[in-house]
Length: 149
Image 1 (cartoon, one colour):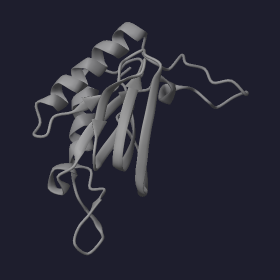
Image 2 (cartoon, one colour; image 1 turned 180 degrees about the vertical axis):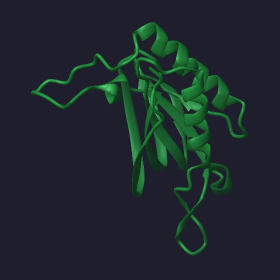
Image 3 (cartoon, rainbow, N blue to C red; image 1 turned 120 degrees about the vertical axis):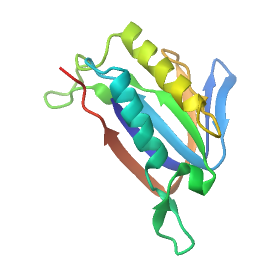
Image 4 (cartoon, helix red, strand yellow; image 1 turned 90 degrees about the vertical axis):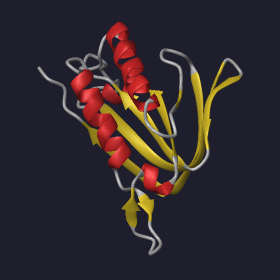
């Protein structure tokens, strides 16, 4: 499972002209689900998201996690993160989980994140989403929990 995380001043997702999620300061995580991923990868990824120290402390060093910084979390499904881009000029999506499995695991991740203080905002799986964000820093990281074979 893959997360491209960004520290944001604000972020929102719009589907068919309606806002499905919006946050102020916090973390936007674009989520890619690969074949072989399971709840185990989702749980580990969520643990990493919540404990990843990307927010500045009083000295300006990245020492605070999401809760310590009082930030919000937004999860947005993005299957293109699982693409194989090693050859040619067109990505292959064979490493991505099948849509039904990807949606199931994304919903699981959202449910687990919703149990945390502060909850979670989301995009919509399989929808044509318009994601708006203000990257704070900019601060962007790639986190990956490898799928099981």
